[in-house]
Image (tube, rainbow, N blue to C red):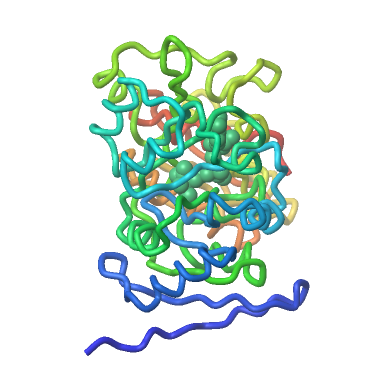
Length: 355
Ligand code: TXA
Ligand code: MG
């Protein structure tokens, strides 16, 4: 016998609204919960749900008023376009105006999965989704809960990560509830997301495909399927003055509350010194470490030395250090090889600017 789904209410004093959060089995979500999520989406509401990468904040991509609510809930500027989630390649073709051979090959190799393709958009997709661009970012997620909701809703779902603008992406429903409780209609909780960092975004418009945002599908893995890749002006995580083709990559992103100091072998002593100084001044120091560091660090988190496991653990570790009130986080840089590129990109962004 199936247990009745239990809805927990999160009340937000500022918005004076409630959000319900409901737990489902990540492999076999309760159809009544999936049905409720689909219903909310079809009626123009907002549902936060797990994908394999991070939790997304979804709305019906064909309903501009619904999509507008995403920007309001996240406090995200409407100049930053959203990713459209669909169930399969056929549905992806329906939101795009062109489907080149490279798209077909990448879709066959990596969908469903953490890959987003940027292509000329179909005229039916509202401007608010693509921030007025003539392209659309589309992806077919593999998470069974995301897929069940897409199938039941029967519409493409526009969904950015379910965090407030510039803050850390959520890999657990608790992260979503904390950031967006009282601002969304439903949070579907299926536990931690397995990939942990956002999808690889590839632009397929130019003569050569370009990685706009590195993720867990590496450049060599892409090149093995479609041949050589082009370079983006300034590099995917390069300086902010270079012209760039992905509006959302300009800002400081994925940032914890604390100031972040990245270190490698050559700056390990300096990191240790900064930790001691901050601790002596009454600050709270945290660290994400691959080895050890001889410093005064109250909250040490040992990170896995495997890139897939590191990606899965990264945001939850940073959320934990935020909750513990760290004001300085020392992060040991990961290796500089293709398998680590997506992770190094997020670490660099977390460190940029301080807060
Ligand atoms: O893994 C993911 O991709 C997650 C899950 C929820 O699917 N979503 C996600 O969405 O990370 P978001 O909105 O946080 O990031 C989308 C990125 C942004 O950097 C945005 O600028 C870029 O994709 N993007 C979206 N549409 C684009 C377009 N038409 N051209 C170029 N870049 C685009
Ligand atoms: Mg995001």
